[in-house]
Length: 112
Length: 118
Image 1 (cartoon, rainbow over the protein chains, first blue to last red):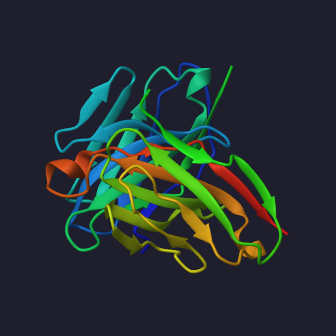
Image 2 (spheres, each protein chain N blue to C red):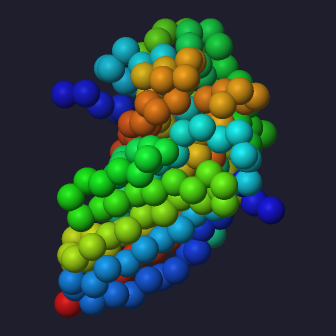
Image 3 (cartoon, rainbow over the protein chains, first blue to last red):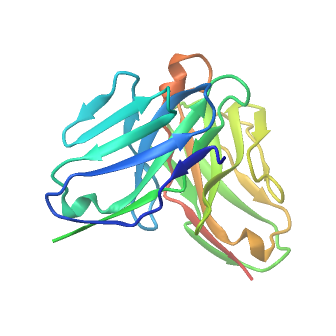
């Protein structure tokens, strides 16, 4: 099983739709989780951290399920500008400290 | 402005000609890291550094060297580049990688360096 797995997509959705991505991780000792957004040929940028209790930032909601070892990202009322690749990132506590594991990303395309 | 600066943005070189990609951050971050991104493979970590004079291998260190003589700089060195090192490279930094609270420190990425080795 790969350390961090994401459905590569693409997810093609109309404007205004709600879309959800999941990301599974294999190391049960993982402690920190993030969603990054990457536009084509640009650097990744932090979208949001994922907290144990779940967290929301405007149209974006992130959740963590430790029992099943996955995190999710929900985007409500999709905008054209949400089109990007969404990267799941997991940080392990102990062992190889500082070694962040990136998923390969899920591509989202929001259409008019 | 807080930022991570990589240079150059684009580089075309020939096999075997040593090159250095510079990375500098002005946020007093302890942690710095280099990644390469290839189609279908995602971001893979090359080397990382948890502080000055402390570096460690990531997932794909072969063919690369790094140094961390100062806190702000973390250059990536290709002593003898080969075509399989053609890739998009990103430098990144974060506040710290030590202590429980630091594990929520997000990464700040540079703009990337697109390297082509012929």
